Image 1 (tube, rainbow, N blue to C red):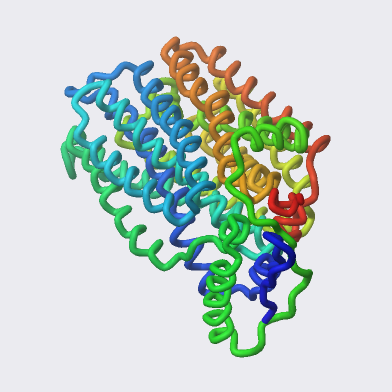
Image 2 (tube, rainbow, N blue to C red):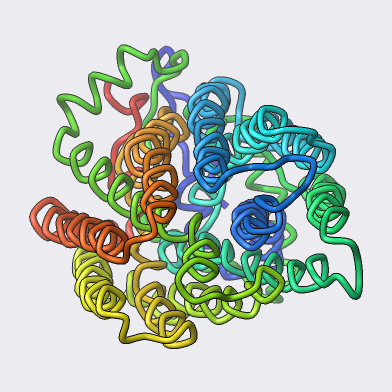
Length: 483
């Protein structure tokens, strides 16, 4: 086992990255995925519940929301997600990954339950905003922790698969809607409220799972705690070696030389983004904003399109969400391994471009009224089979683009900007277009979303970089290594 060693002054060498990357796949990695990756399942559950329950919430005698207000509550959720990502992203880099992913899940639990007790538009929007803040904070803390503890050879595959589990939550939300909106089972006014309350209560299980996850050793080493980082890795290695049954594989690369230093300042973060990694910043902004508009504009208003243009009853929306969610779930699992084998640049470009082209075709068919409700669902299922890994790859890209000391903040900034530009406006605009009742306006919205996906594909092809099977430190050197 290679040990860290001190050099002159505050400079030291550490094998922590190499030791983490050489580990064979183990139960420990599954625990990391289960305990932290559940974030995306929760987000999928939340988003789909609102999408599937949109008609029931619109018809609720206690809330009395218009179609435009339904879109605005979706935007409120995303405003909370933006604020939560920025605030908790900063805290994650300052205080550590572990502390923050406990705080964010508690905020989610309390806010989701409170949503079930909303009494008017403003209370519903406020509690949705707080729920979004919890989920936004989760994205920053959890994405950084997962990327830092998964071996480099599997990082792309795992990151895309974990982000893709958003759609497992979507399927769960759609299935739940079929029950809670069935008047033969429960009064819809009680049903939609129970969905939020039960969903929040179930998240308590996550607290137990996360108690077994250590602090990220990479965060510890870049924050001047090499001894603690070494002890955490040693504990992980002991457990893995015991289950592995033979000596661990040799290290594939040497130590990283670092200097003890404080937390990255906001000035440093902005300097790195605007000057040292300007092209990566442009790439990250483009990927995040384009996929956010495409996803949020369509998915948050999916139920309204089905009810308004295809006359689908609110209680049956879940049947149409399920195949759509399945396509989104399968995409990252089927195509994810190719992001580690073929490479990031080729796969990201291809998935964005294919989904954009197919969306143009689908929008044209929608405008001319050629599709039934099921054919429209099938079209979107195929489109988002490719769009889902593309969207997940946006998070992967921004996480790999910048130094460890600012990784959570970088993820938060790009998530916030992409969501603000593409996500907050999208649902409100599409809600307004749907309320207008003209297919040509909706088709125009689809065409604009398709154009953005094609723009993202072009940007990736021009500015994309190779990160597959490489350590995070070799893709972007830590700030502590620049001495």
